[in-house]
Amino acid sequence: MKSAEILRDVAQTLEDVEKRINSLKNLSDKNKQKALRLIHEARENFFQLSNNLAVDNEELANFFLKRAVRLKNNTTDKYIDKMGEKEYMKEVALMNKYSKVAPYDFAGEVKVLRRAYFAFLAGMVPFYLISGIFGPVYAVTALILIIPTLLAMLSLRKRGSLGLMLSFAVMPIPMVMGAFSIRYAAYAFNNPDELARIAEAFGRSISFAQGVVITIGVLGAASLILLGYASYTLYKHRHAFL
Image (cartoon, rainbow, N blue to C red; front, side):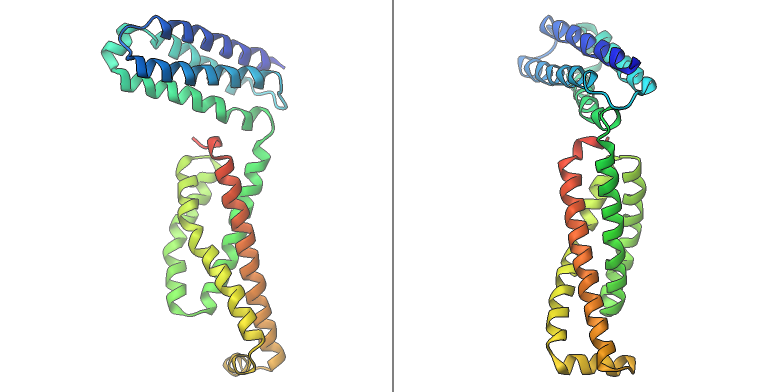
């Protein structure tokens, strides 16, 4: 694959960056050691990736190469004196982040993110269904979460860090709601008075009320399990988001 050759060029360019960092005078010792560590890690990541490609993407590989060349050209005392250490270290950190993002595009690991995305989406649906059953307070809470949920979905599809942060922000309440639904379903199913109250509210039989309670429990369990999986997977693969 052509991408493998380009990614090896990226690794080689980053090795040149390491050599330049060692000769810098306008970079503090602390930042120099940090930069060397980050660039060495990035170089190793790109080199290992070049030997384990599953997808050929020359355009993206060339993007990483251009970024590496740009960093190499900026690894000078003149540039650091002009832009400052902070700005230079941002570029170093970004290159390191690119090296952690790359496997999801070249090694086929992006399918894990797709599963997490669909788990997030599928886990939020039961929450909105359940919220309407438990009354106006829960319904209002669900309405408040609609916008951040939609933004999270859109950003997650594009692997944006905003989507990652928003998903972590909105998932706790639905997960608590899922646990509450399971607890309520267990209570109501074994409480004749509660079943009678539900049957009366719907104007249906006790059997129908039992079906409603079971549905609530199943939806709550689905929401809790799916969002639990989504939160774990998204956190584990948080480096895939920019």
